[in-house]
Length: 425
Ligand code: LLP
Image (tube, rainbow, N blue to C red; front, side, top):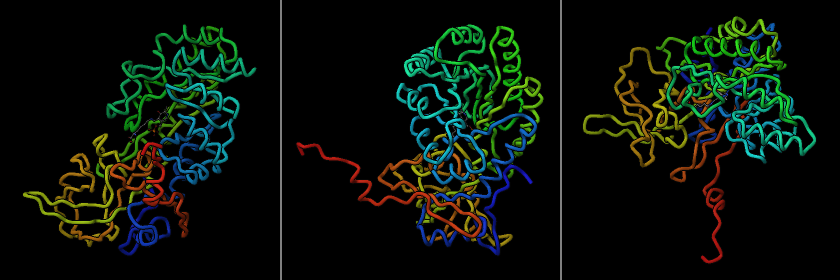
């Protein structure tokens, strides 16, 4: 059993999501669509929760990974907190029934409106990323006659060894305050009215496939905790961020499991007596979702075989944006030993970047056949757009033998009617 274990498996030659044949959902909803498994979401949340057993802790799901209300409600009911990075995400968390004391607010550019809304609506803590932000929170809280609980995000200057676009813990990244300046900034925080410094926050990147960078960062946080305590600060909470990676390709070595990650957390910061928060996103949602798509055409190029799907880069941007590799499987299980041939798998969008995979070995497929992109639950639907006026992909949630559309596909009229014509036209 690995962290990747999910509930999208073949049964009698057909891909199932839990106890529902995926093709049946496709026949009802139409393609493309995102499909999530409740059991997988819960399993992944619990793996983290159990990994921190023995320490006071809260797993705050980084909802930027997948923020549909039904997903949030599923996790919130299991006891998850939420990590939000915008007023919109805060509103989503509240709408899903998450109490303010389980919501942490991260992000480098929190606006005054966002800060005010979170303060008045209830917040567990702000993870502050700069002195100017700290001053603004202090000012707003003071005006409201409130005290804002804050941690300060430190940038530990550790190489997360992940894709450059999702590494956040190096000194050249925009995130956090340099750990070398931490004492000075904590002293400033202690002197400001309206805020109470309760801890330290760190997040070094996403899709980390090794524990070592985490270990380095957390060791620095542990050291800093002692230094700040000696300076008189009551450091009682550590937010250790998210970032644990998932296996996208089964052939690659699997990243460490949550239980190993938890052990490393206990090793590095367990002795400090702090309450621990983590903010995993991808590992909870990634392998809990697939993107289902239909083959529109097979096209023979000069020396390439193109598989043209009805899903495109606007629906799943990760391959175009991060050169991400997603496993693509047919909904009908290929016969054992069937010959696989290389295909360039592309979408209909008018850009060469709309390529999901090059020379991917695939069994024979024909127009009308259905395929699924695996590991698409995180940073899939949330990063989708309506480029080329392609309706935002619908989302569907499965639980046991039931499924429900949790976000409907908009009609063309709905899309067009969001535009308004100025009076002079
Ligand atoms: N906490 C903070 C402060 C973050 O910035 C992030 C992710 C997380 C937690 C959750 O990290 P996770 O556990 O999901 O790795 N769109 C990119 C990933 C961007 C990650 C941004 N920050 C992708 O598709 O790979």
